[in-house]
Structure formats: C-alpha cells, structure tokens
Length: 391
Image (cartoon, rainbow, N blue to C red; front, side):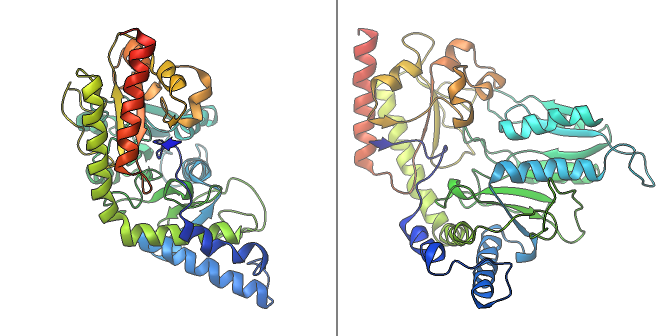
C-alpha cells in the first residue's frame, strides 16, 4: 500500500507511540486524583500542555484539551455565540453576525448555520478560483456588526492557505472575536496567533493519536465561552470529562516533534509534492492544479505536502481511477464526506464545474513518504487510467 492521503489522517509517529505506552498500563492514574499516581498523571498532562503551547507560541494556560478539532471548533463557535446570545444582558446591542467561508470544514459550516436557529446571522463568504477569500468582500461583510469570524488557516482538501494575519487584523478592528481551524496548518507552516482569540488543533493531523485535540483560548484579554456540556469542568471549567492521559501525552510529544522538525520536514515534503506533480503531468499533460485559477502554475501559498489536481473534463471520473488502483491510498476530498458520493463542495465553491470536480484527486504526502513510492504511485495511476479509458 502506498499511502498518499496525509490530509485525511497521519500515522502515529513511533516516537509518539513510545511516549504513550506507559500511560495505558503502568502509569494509569486519573489526572484529577490527589494520590501519587494521580499527581504523576497530572504532571504528564502539564508537560503535554506546555509542549502544545510551545508549538503554537502561546502559554500553557491557554491550551484546553478536547477530543479533537471538531469538538474544539464547536466549543469555540458555539461557546462564543451562546455566551453572547441575543437577549443576554449587556450594555451594547448584541452582535449576531458570524462570518466564515464556503470552503471551511463541515464541522465549522454546520455549526455556524445551526446557530441561525438560535438567533444568529450566518454569513458564508465565497472564494475565488484560487480558493482564497476576496479581502474587500471580507471587509464589507464586517461592516455589519460581527460577533465572530472563523476562517481556517489551510484548507483540508486543497491545502490553500488564507492570508490569516490580514484577515485576523481586519476582524479584530471590526470588533469581532477571531477563531481559526489550524488542524491542517499547525506545525506545517509558520503561524502566529497574535491576532487570534481562539484556534483549534487536531492530534491525528500531526502524527499524534486520534481522539485528542486542543482549543487555544486567549487569556489576556480573556475570551469568554459557554461550555458545550456539563460535568466536572476539568479543563478550566470549559471542557468537562476525565482527561485521556495517554492521548494527551501523545499529543504533546507529537507537537514537540513538529516544533523541532516541522521546518525541515516542510522542505522535503515540498520537494516530494513537486516530484508527484511532475510525474502526473507525464500522463496528464493538461492537468490542472486546483487552487491557482490557472492551468499550469502551482498554488502558492499552500501546504507543502498537499496536491489537489483535476485530470480534465473527459475520461473516467477520479473515483473510478482510484478503484482501479487499490494499492494507492488517495482520496477525492474530505474523508468526512467521502461516503456521500457527491463531488467536493470545496472545489465547487472554487468555481469548478461538476465534470472537473468529479475528475479531481486529493493527494498528500507526509513524513513517511519516499521518492520510490511517489514514482510507483504515478506509474500505477497512469497505467490504470490508460486501461480504463481504453487509450
């Protein structure tokens, strides 16, 4: 199996697994307990919190552990909205508008649209052919008093990176709370949270375990959130539930490795991505890179290991191609919507026709991808295309 779907999930780094193992059986204490095993677990959680904070360039007190980025996104968006809900006591007219983009992850889009039932005003902005929001359109959207802006740093299907610093500054100037989904970007590209109030990270996108993530919550000035559910309030009274110490330790170790190795790794991944792109062009000379708005240029800025390509408007759909090459693990779009059979809503929002969207592949390389795997995958995909298209 040649794995080219690192945007969907990453394998757990063996060094992360090694760090986690003792906390399943040997050091199994509850981090909330006051006895010695509990205190040892609490110390491990504190170390992991500091490791994640080090990756993001924030303080450990601003890190809240969750079950993943989906929960973190829900807590950020619903937490802000419900704390400032229409009709809540306050000296000013409540802000109702929540601004996001049409290419956001489903968990953000659905959270924002669901809040309309609670009296909020979703404002979902479109993007251009390059996958980026028009800054003037963004500015105009903020002319209506805006409660919250949520824009992901890097897209989970195309790897397209938004101009996060500029957008955050515009939102802050307009008086809005600023949230960003960093699930794909954390540790992979340079980031600054200086203009952000909230940010979400996922463990399994950075070679850590599944089932763990974090929400960055700025302390000064303090961001106020309403918790999603009731309980013991283990995470700063914002997120209840017994902390899964092994997963927390794994998240911390994964973050530490990304902080230490991410920059060098990005250089290698960009080189692998270019090798993959040039190999595909041998078989598909008119291949288009989704996220540029042009036929031939590579999308910049973009995640170094991400490549979303349209093979053209004619020939078999990309799904048929992948089914013909089971040895290559790639995808058509987000894993969250893979079972629907529909073409990518992200690509359609970027202006692709249904035919182009159906013939687009999401390929992504990662820490354990080799040049040999790239070459073999390209050869197999090209041979399968020739076979099923009869050419």
